[in-house]
Image 1 (tube, helix red, strand yellow):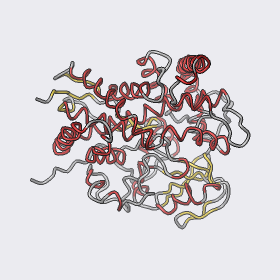
Image 2: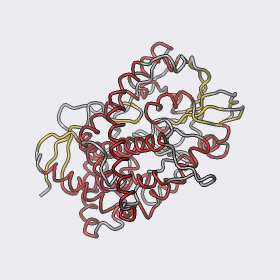
Image 3: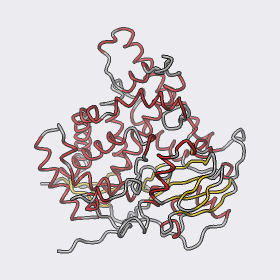
Length: 457
């Protein structure tokens, strides 16, 4: 029987670019709806905003140049820094230069392949706890987008924040959702280049959330420092211990209090938001594909019998679904840099000050790089298909020196959680609900993901 073709929901590319006022409105509500057909067809599209010249780059060789070969000429642009500045300044996500290098070296050991693999049992325990909650809702509609955020926060507490996250987990989840919604609104004042000292309404709205996060972080730090002082040998070597003990390899200086705080917030935010979205989109796509729904259930039924050690590596078809979900709905919607000096990318001259945008959402659906790019097809990543994909055509977690440090952690966690759910339940989209992707820093389904969850016999 022929495989049914599934083209999951996505905005239709515009025939012509939006005018300035309409563009501001769309960027403020859902930037995915601003892309034109040319962006999905051309290697580079040059244009402009009130803030200056913009180059949207989708040629793999040019992306390699920006993110690997000529990184010294491209730094994180002021617009991206401003959008991410609310609470994340000084952390690994936004730091530059030596500050970033020191933090990356200090934190890298926690995310080594060996360390991440050791988290498999804890991830399985969290996934099973989620399954128990779902079991109590047999036959009912459950918002799996909400449950995905809950399970990822649970994983954080079981792995890299083993003293807990400082406050009630549900309070953190709700505050984090609001935080990303406000953070993801591109303020017209930013696009107009208005100086940073001019107040932004969105920044006011995130202040209560930031106060909650700061209070939680203070509690996390105080608890751990107390344990380090009382009995250092019994303290777990998790991310918090590494942060508190990290030192500059050149002068031995510890991370500042601001750097420690920013990184804790970064790992709570990025460590659950992007992974939760990956799980959510994977479950949505599986709910729409009977073939893959049953393939993943069958694989989980086989592989879970082999224990948790190396489980994620054995879930090859589940990983392919997750990789395809990350292609269609990448956790990293856009990477942007500003050119410090002139360069050439994809045959176009890049002047100093040009904003260079690499949009994984566009790149992953580019007509020149993918066959039938809007189609859901996990086979792209199976049977040698993965090796045929250009490394710079697929960037769900970035690439180069600043590739997401937690990518392996997120992929392993997503594989375990998705397989656990499909092993125990049949999931179908709630009648009448329409799924639509919205960009709010990350990509999430508007209105959540209400699924009917039924126990398997």
